[in-house]
Every structure is written in C-alpha cells, then in structure tokens.
Image (cartoon, rainbow, N blue to C red; front, side):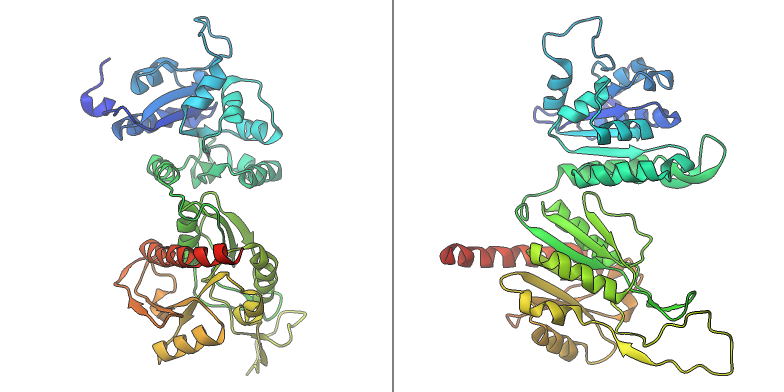
Length: 413
C-alpha cells in the first residue's frame, strides 16, 4: 500500500517529533487516524505499542501510516545499537498515549515500568499527554481518579474522554476524545511559550452557590468560561497555574491544578491560602454578593410568602488587599449601569492593577466585549471576540506588567 503526498505529509528538517503510544483498548483503531493527521501536519511520528495493543490493530498499519518502524518489544529480534527506551525517550518532543487504558495510567502513577511504553514514559523529559478510553465504571473508579490526580500533580497532561456509546454497549463517560480534540491539545502543548515560565498564576472562575436549605441555593448564571480560558492561556504561556472554581461543567484545562469550591466562603478561604504563593491573581469568578443569613435545617415548605434575610459574603479582593505587595492583581466587574464609573471605583478601592468591565450578556456566552481599565489611567475597549481571545488580550497585559515590575524588583534586591 502506498500513501499519497497528502497522506504522508511533508516533514521539514526541523519537524517536531511525537511518539504516539497505543495501549490495549478497542479504541486503538482510532489511533491510526491520529497518526495520519499528525503526519499531514508535518510532524515526525514514531508509534510505541503495548503487547495488548497489537491484538487490536496491527503494527504494519501504523508503520505504513507513520513511515517509521513501530516499537513494541523490550528486546526486538532485530537488535538496535542504542538502548531503545532511552533513545526513544530522548527523541520525542512530546509523547501522547491514545488510547490510554487504566492499566498504563496505573503503572505510571505507581512507577512501574515493565514493558516498553511505560518505560519510555518514565524515561522521557518531554511533555506526556494521556487520552483515556475505557468502560464508564472503570473511568469513575476512585482508584483511577486518584491515579489521574497524582499524575496531574507531577505535570502529566490529560484529555478527558467524552460521554457516548461504549464498546460494551452501554453509554457513559469513557469514550476516547475526538481526534480533533487530541490534536488541539497536542498543538497547545507544543506551541506554548515561556513568557510566564517563572510565575505562579492564581485564577478564580465560575459562580458560587449559597445554600438556602438542604435542596435550594442562591446563585447566578456564570459558567466559568472566562476564568477557564484565562487559566488555559496562562498555562500556555508557561505559568504554574492554580484554578479555584465554583461549580462548572467545563473540563479542567490541560496542566492546570483545579481546586473546586461551592460557596463564597470556601472560595475566600482557598484564595487566602494560595494567594501568598502566587505572583498573579486573576479574579474572574462571579462570587455571590449576598447569602441567606440563616440556612434552614430542612426543606422550606411552599407557602404564601417567604421573607429572606440576606447578609454580605466576604469581599475577597478587599480582604487580600493588604497582602498584595508587588503581586499583579486583576479583577472583573459586571455592571448594568454606570459601568465605567463603578469599575473605576472598584479598581481604586481594591488596589487592583487593572479591572475588566463586562456586561450581564457575557454570562454563559462564548464571546464577550470588554473594557480594560488600568491603574495607570489607561482604558482599552476590546472588540467583540471569543473568551479565549479576550483571555489572550488580558494575559498580554499581565505579561507587560510582569516586565514592567521586573526591573524594579532587581534594583531592590
């Protein structure tokens, strides 16, 4: 079988090198499409298979698509002059395991290297991206959840599986993420910059929920899209990112540490814990301004009328103001009237470096139009754009502030 030029792709002399690891999942057949797409985009690809993977798809298929020998044995019949797992580990700019079974995730989390792929993963210094695929019950098993959490802490990246029909006939979360999603994650990892590589960025996102009784709560329509976009963009620029998020259905951004909270009180507590260890805080969460003064111990019955007594929630930005020092802090303001005037007051009263003003229509939307007000008196109105593009504009400002404050820190040291 011969490949067309379009199938082979064009590999420049400085092409990025990717290892595609394939494990024993029924989804292994989809890895052929991943290899083909990577080649089309100009990457050099080497496939490393576990013994179980060869039961689902033949090495010949992947060798033909990749244009390189497939590695699957510790001690291949045709001996090579170099130590195979070390040479592969050093060759790669990125290693993606797709599909990744619970077995390979558990091995790496436990430091077990008893076959070639696990050994290459353990030996490489390149970024490693796992794309899990398995039965829904296996994916929700607390042991696997703990293993994924542990690997995330060590810097391993994950593309979450999607909900869909599984090979067992059931429907649930465990289906391999779409190839285009895996490709996007690969691009993001390989094209990240180092602008914020020495910085720790703390982002808050999403809404908070304030309990009224055991089954009801007060909240707002925020989905967390803006905060998650900020966390993703900060990570892409090399920062060590912690994301404190209220309830959201969004997947955790690649490489970002997610801290989940519900109430304003919980968010305040986590921000106070992480802020002293951060260089930048981007307070994008839609924190409730009020909460019920008293939470009912049992469900409130339907009645003619209900009088709620509310009290203020913690003002997180005001509480951490004394701890700011040289840290960069950006806030968000959502106003329905006198937006610029109210945003300026908030900017000054809370000692922010900048504040992002948006409108209620931004809640839950994929796009936004914002105005950024700086402590230097400058105001910039951005055009309507996606929230990821807004995040890039905001991070451009953060990078500028980091560069401005950098020399001052050097002079005082």
